[in-house]
Length: 381
Image (cartoon, rainbow, N blue to C red):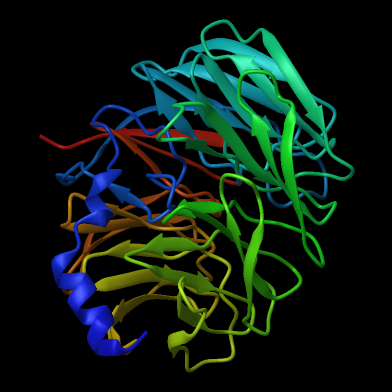
């Protein structure tokens, strides 16, 4: 794909908006099934602290505690933590409504499928609970632990829903959302750590085999492999026929989903990227372990601006209302920056690293921290 063709797509396509989040909910952990990190909510600063919920106590010698990003639907918040607990909370008050327990950590975000909430666990199982009651509906066993976020794909013809999730058994699975039965499994060369993005009829994911895998989302048939040369620790994003990926080779890349050719590559410093990219109109936003947050031109791959934080940024950003971008940092701050200029609009000090991606559900903003707390904020007036 030439840059001229990409430019024409960027200015003519509205696909970034087709799967926009419904105001009041955050049913996809990265805003939509293509994992572009978008919210329609316009944030008004300062945000107001609403409540905190203690999800777990810090075990001796453990660092990370809350890396799973929350999801929200129907006035309820759903999130898991490292000690094997998964919570449903009231969005307005933070009151616990139900709790499920497993024998491993919940690192990946959950996904909704009809009446069910589905999440993978490090005990090797994918769990499905009734979202209202917490009663287990089914569970599916993989052959290794699961760190990846779940995604859900709805077949436009049959309207049937399918859970897409990767495991450390080197496979990405498509499961029947109602029953948990396996529909297909795509085998790779190593661990799958991040969620699988769905767009253009494809499911795209990377892993520790340093390859972008592109499969038909209906039948799981492999269509192509794209070598990126380094571990991919998080989800990719798909927008306008282009795959955007950040990786441990200290680079952010853009690749054509059609022919697999590289559109551009960005990166100057020898610090890896763990946070996933967020895509908005003409810009890619991503934090790095160089302690900087980067805004990259989608057409040229050149830097538009950068913001300097005090520690590495592993939190995947969310673009809010086309005006601001929100992310956590290991320096203990939740930051909001102006989308165009990169200037700081607001920050909150949690005092512990913030590695999870924020959830923006209507006027509520949620993020988990390594002090074991889930923080909730209310949009400013």
